[in-house]
Image (cartoon, rainbow, N blue to C red; front, side, top):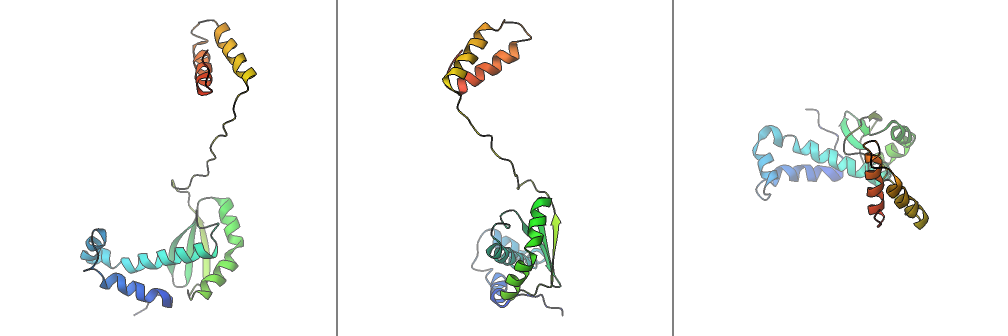
Length: 169
């Protein structure tokens, strides 16, 4: 039988996942009760431990990157962007050495770019306060604009801006 490449610090925890079904409650009991799912628990524990070790070695990357697969010495990582994948690729030697030092039997590391919904590199717009002169000018514009259907949306937008900044037209 081809035995998976568990590092020594993980072998005991993989056995404990299988042997602790009587003491756990809830979801773990449910998963343990189903043979097909229970057989996946050691692999899940192994991937979670590998993710944790990778995050310890390269903490700046593994907030967004994840371990996808580890089999036959090949580690496959996921990156949400091409730019992050390129930076991670530069750190592969450091990651490989760190994992080998932790007794993971990793021979190669492959990086796949997979955008996920959970990773959003969206910066929040910066709120800049408007000066009193700008607020006065906006209030004057809102008063002076004609009440026509063409100006309706503009007047509404100006009113929203003035209310947001604590003034009314």
